[in-house]
Image 1 (cartoon, rainbow, N blue to C red):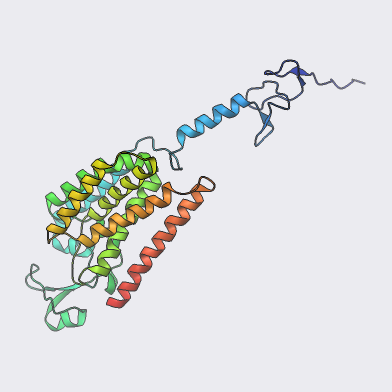
Image 2 (cartoon, rainbow, N blue to C red):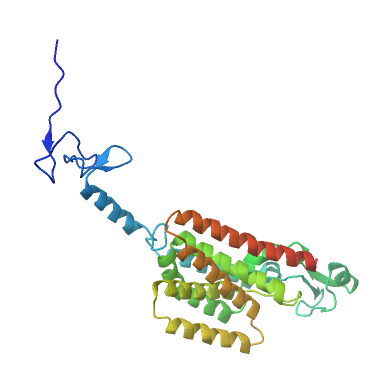
Length: 306
């Protein structure tokens, strides 16, 4: 009968005078009781644990999530969507813009002259009485407008300014927040801008453009800067100039800009101030709560206008 082979004891790679039968599951080094670190399977040596932790940190963003390998990608996609919608409106005309732009309660267009409208006809029934063409708003069922309006532009200068701002703000924010958190912040900013328009603009007002989402990214930049104690003089100057431009020009939706700014700041604060323990869960629950609250505000206002 063959006798079972006795295990061979080796000296720990860090403490040669200590005999051990345990080896690191990654590199195979002998490790004693003081050097072994519990892993998912077996034990690992301190060097392997440190190397793995370093690799993990390199792929993790500063506020959780996976670090973007190409931080311009999401910005390029967003710009592409905006340009595609603008081109569609250029080809299809105002009917597409009216379908996608945000209208809290809807409005009544002249059936013979699309550039004219009837301000007194605030419902589909009244619009029909005066022989107009009713353009549905959020309160009359066009719920998609709270998001599609943020991707809708008509004038070249409008889309040009917004996309230029997005090009400069998007990549650094994606670098800081990670791709999915950056996209969530952008969309929540747009949604918050729409909520502010619903509540504080005239029901017949038509609002369109990515400005609310862009203001949200300015707010995100400021919140991240406060978190890391960066010099924010340039950011605050840029914000001040944009706010002055917003309130001086009567044709600009201050409601969308302020709503987007506050939405972006709130979303980013949830991300960057979440505790390290269960950080990802806290972040996504917080962002989901913000989204639900914003949508609820839109629903309540739409019910009032219906």
